Length: 418
Ligand SMILES: [Zn+2]
Image (cartoon, rainbow, N blue to C red):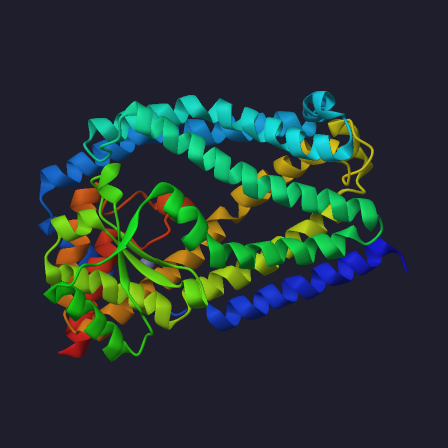
């Protein structure tokens, strides 16, 4: 029995587990949101607001897709030609040129280069969100955000790379098994620590001050039977006018976060409606589901990478002799980018189903479809989201049902509840 055989067996087991978890935990049934209701809702929205949202998204598309294409192209050039391997050698040389130096500084150099290629497109996007009044950030504060997110990525990526190449070095035949387990463990660890270690790098979180709204929110959580110690307010207004709320973290780090912009823009009833949606995520353990799917998918990806690593043609293209050497970082990132791109629509589909279930939860919990609908319209108009986006964009990337879909779901719920 070869190691490749065992790796293929492990990959098969992981894929079966992934399918099993997905089948059991993803809400495949979608609450009704008839197209007739969607069109009726769309017809009631102010035409100039809809036109403005569509103009905003048309303006955003060139830098958005241009940036994606440029980033992908740079990653593929680095990964599928000897350029990436050369860059890793070059970056590692001043630091001794050994495998640690190559893994750490080579990894940073390859990701920094890919980042730099997409930076002009990100800047272009920034000018558009500023022009449309969504972003309130100056160039300075925007640049600080870019630097911070690269730094966060560098710390997490650097630790992952050192861990990975240490395993490859000390278990040259079985590294794929340890690396798969380690990568899955990292996904789980990040779910726990991101809310307490990473999110505060970008925003300040404060417990919502004592108020009738806070009392109402905790009462709704209590009625829902979801353990929520507190509702946190994020100082989102320091960079955006957009309104949002989310739930993140697992177990002891689970929190519901509301943007301060939301408290300013929305009525208290609407905030209750949004928090009821977030409680739906908490009640159905959606962060846990996402983490579990992410961990299994990542482990499967690592083993697939190992199996692909015996493809001589691919190694020759990248100018390397083994997928387990630090000089292969470019190739690894290129394969990961292609896998991420290919998996995007499936991820978006799963996300939309989970979001639709959280919407249904909010409607059941509040019994107030009118406020839910008003809130959807508020979200859409303040955030300038296209209430009824083009089908191709929806299928490729929409993480949430469209505004008119969510309004239609509220209408269908109201009819059913009556
Ligand atoms: Zn949600």
